[in-house]
Image (cartoon, rainbow, N blue to C red; front, side, top):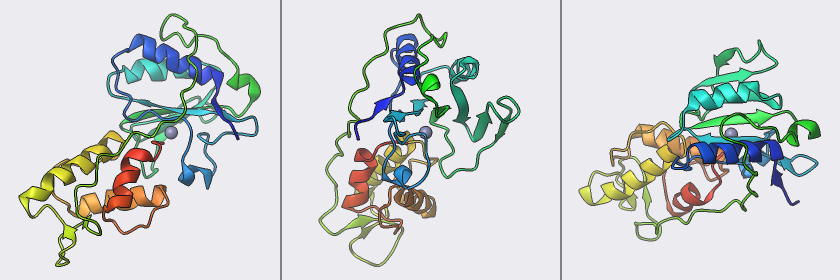
Amino acid sequence: MPWYLAPSLAQLRAEVNARWPHRSKASDGTIGDRAHSARTSDHNPNSRGSVNAIDITAKGIDTRALIDAAKKHPSVRYIIFNRQIMNRDIGGFKPRRYSGSNPHTAHVHISIYQRASAENDRRSWGIAAATAPQPDPKPKASKAPPFPLPKGHWYGPESRDPRNHSGYWKRDRDGIRTLQQRLKDRGWRISVDGRYGPDTRDVVRKFQREKRLRVDGGVGAETWAALWEAPIT
Ligand SMILES: [Zn+2]
């Protein structure tokens, strides 16, 4: 089914882009991925084809100003940021601990009500002078850099398997840093140290679970590609 970002959220995004033109978009997202479609998520198009959630990258914007503006907009139902969820219908956006697998430290998630009136409310969010909402671009997959290892090899925690690359050898560390940085840009909490330790393995497992990949905690060609090509949600 063709889908579109709810016009109220398209208006929000246009204002965010106008106020912070140099902001990072590394963790931006609108439509959900296959993992989301298996469960209820506002990132999935509803029966009208409307996507009622948006993720806005925290880097390069004033997240406080964004969240304050979102709380004032009548379409907004809840906001997730920095391990906290704020729901209009629970204590009037009273912050509560959010314990989902993605801590939402790299992006602010904003969900609106599942109602046509909330979707079509194009009033200004008071973030920037009202600008014409921009048409939603097709969700574009960013191109993955080529997988650095030979076919059938993978990055993983230290093991005796000669196909496994843990960062024990210096030559493997750039590739590991690249995948760790990409996970970080996508919003996961991970240190970019070029060593494939248990922390990296655990984050990769969560990522694989979310993206419905084989959950082995290692990064082979398939997981490597998904790190760039799977939508960020
Ligand atoms: Zn989200």
